[in-house]
Image 1 (spheres, rainbow, N blue to C red):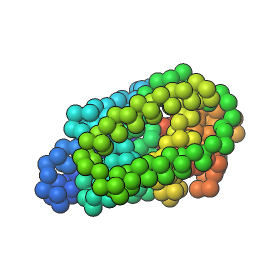
Image 2: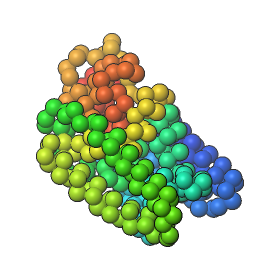
Image 3: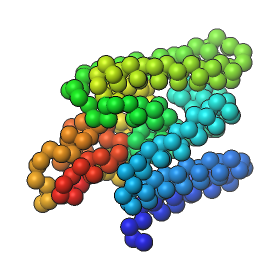
Length: 272
């Protein structure tokens, strides 16, 4: 049972968040929501430990579809970054603000960019494309993410400054249209750069939150240099171009790590 300590730890963390928010907000939804996400992640980690090749994809589908279809399309919540700005400007700690606090602002201090690897509904689709490992060198286009970040902020700020009525409905359609654009751009970039994760590296505005926080992440993949034979298998397998043989927090592309564990699976000496 000691093999399953990590699934239990993650389940305990999410159950704690679920209970605290349920009691603090007086809303049973938070108990059910975070319990479901915690159980999905714990299941995926347990499947990985048992050697199931598609364990991460299981979590992506369980969490990603839940957030996209149920929370977004059915419940009408904008879980994109525009939804976060909307609730933040409205002064309400609900829905997207809680989601961002847990998954993308404070959570990465514990689990880094695990959100990108296991729960993002955009990456959920992009990871099914034919270029899981980049076939071209990374481009110097990361600056674009700061433009999309600023545009999302400016869009919502303009709605509030203009005192636009029925902003909630606009937020719903912004979620629909925004996701369609994200998928279209993400798929186009994947084929153009032969890299499924090109959108994540260059366009996604959420990484502006994730990257600085994940630098201090408690959960990190490290290398046992006594076992490492410098074969480069981990670097070739990494979809984000991270140098896993360097244990420093400042390692190359260190804040791009999505904890997908492809490097761990590729290492012939189990040094990671």
